[in-house]
Figure 1 (cartoon, rainbow, N blue to C red):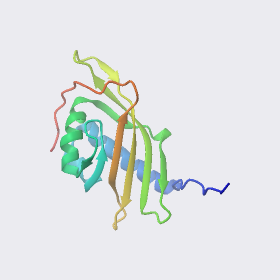
Figure 2 (tube, helix red, strand yellow):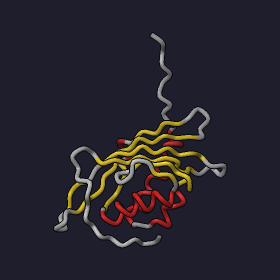
Figure 3 (tube, rainbow, N blue to C red):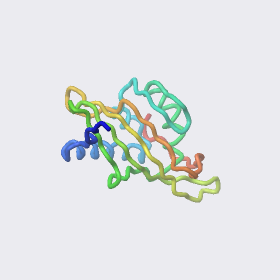
Figure 4 (cartoon, rainbow, N blue to C red):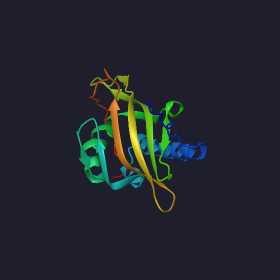
Length: 156
C-alpha cells in the first residue's frame, strides 16, 4: 500500500486571513448587500447552488442564487469553529470546507433553522487578497429549501 501525504492544512496565519474573508462576506449576506459582496468573487466564478446546477459568472450567480436566497433568509454565518482550510503547496489556492447557519421563514412568518455547508475555492491575487473562484453551498438534509422572507436588497 502506498503512503499518502498529509492533508495540506493551512497555517494559522493563512487560516485567519480566510476566516476574516468569510466573516466579511457573511456580513454582506446578512445585510443583503450585493454591491459589497461582489468584490469577494471572481467575475467568471463557476458555482453550484440551491437553485441552479451549474452557474457561470458572478452576474448570473447573483441573479440565480443570491436573489433567491439572501432576501428570503436572515442571520447567515459561517461556523468557523468547524471550518477547515486546505492550502495548495504554492499558497496560491485555498479550499474552505465550512458549515453555515441561517434562519428561514415559513409562509406564516415563523422562523426555522436553516443550516447548510459550503465548499469555497479561493485564489490569492497578486495584491495578496483572496478572491472566490468556486462556491458550492447546500442545505443540510431535511431542511426546507423554500424560505419566504422578504428583506430589501441594500445595494445592487
